[in-house]
Image (cartoon, rainbow, N blue to C red; front, side, top):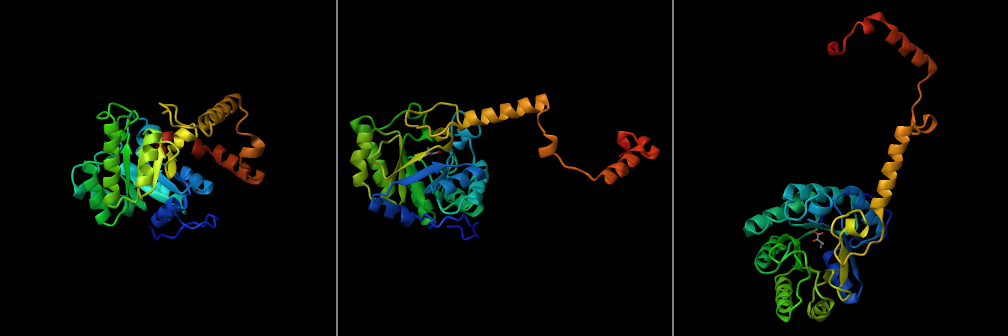
Length: 305
Ligand code: KIV
């Protein structure tokens, strides 16, 4: 947890911690998690009282305009996570390890997780998949950084999974999912994301797991839910998965605002002389006019300056 001084938000609630998330599961209190990628959206998540903020690698798609999550790199993720940190006080902040930042070796995984902590001030990191990622998660946890797991639809390896589609839809696939989740729990992950998994599979697994399960397209039986901010607010116009619920139409509002501005500029309604401009005392303006009339000034050509 960063010890840097925080801005007063006026909120009385305690900072959300990893033991606090575990306690919420025990108490049957749902964990609310959203993604954020910049300072203003972090401030809004703070003010809305969410529990956990993830700087997700979905940024590759919803912020950077790629058609997959794989192109985003550590430096871009760190820049976004540091901006989110500056806007956040109480929620737990998690940095999403991008594709290529942890698969090659435990050393790589630890080094990049440490960069998230040192350069962006995150409280924890998330990485995708069971299997080979279990070792990486263990190494990061042993290095002192909390890890959130992620199973089911893991977008970084979507092509291996046959695309962006639901996982665990056969008995065998559901059993593999269960094994992955249990392995991630056994090496010390503090929570696990379940993405695009049949509700009935989630319902069967959640009571068998001690760590909180945060769902996205995994039904209502999870200990909490996560949605991508740009999906839930209606900013992103790309592919909208079945599990997304829209709570606002922000893109439409943005379009309305920019069109209104463009109309006003073109018609001369903006800026308004009274409301949006600065004044200068009459005598100062006269002095400036004398300066402009000065012959030596008139003699200057632009390249003399
Ligand atoms: O990158 C992301 O936004 C995520 C969430 C969808 C869980 O991994």
